[in-house]
Image 1 (spheres, rainbow, N blue to C red):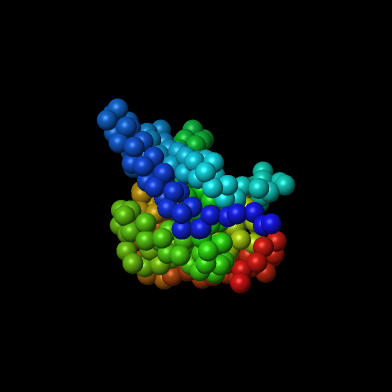
Image 2 (image 1 turned 60 degrees about the vertical axis):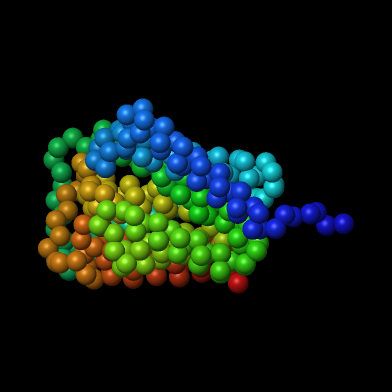
Length: 275
């Protein structure tokens, strides 16, 4: 007799309800305690803006797994290796999206001669919870249930559209930015399906944000960069080479980089299907 599996809709409903309640509750609690997050990326208070996302992802995963035993997408024989490889690939892709405009003269970069180590560590520790949490929420247990109900392609498409749509709430957001972040989601989702776990997308996500803000001094999805290793100045107006105040995710060149990354990932990683 085959093992009973609950309908995906009930699993997703439980996951979403828990995630929303924990996200709202922790954000409210931090605000009441006077710990509201800062958009200045050098500030440790950014942690209080990103921590609710991680807590909501962990809580939704734990509660929903307890009641429904849906696979959370965390099972992999070498999770640290997967995360590390994702971090390297995410850093490489973001670097390409920033170096392309530099090579054509659309952006200038100069080395920051001020001390930056403490700022880099602060930004890594405060931004990482958002990367971990968003991957748990959008490509973790709920995503697994969606795959079971609709198949890989529809699940990746829906989760990616949600990922892009949620970024419309960010400062300086636009429809172009949301579409490009949807493309980021397609890449992360395809990698999750092909590798069988969420660890590599977590590495991709954390590296993308860290390299974007700290290494290249670019806005991080609309949030102004803090102290950075390189100081960037856009020469070209927003368009193909520049994403303006939103950052590289609103530039046409980044769409080219993401399309290449998606294609190469589909060829290289083949543990799972995407049919």
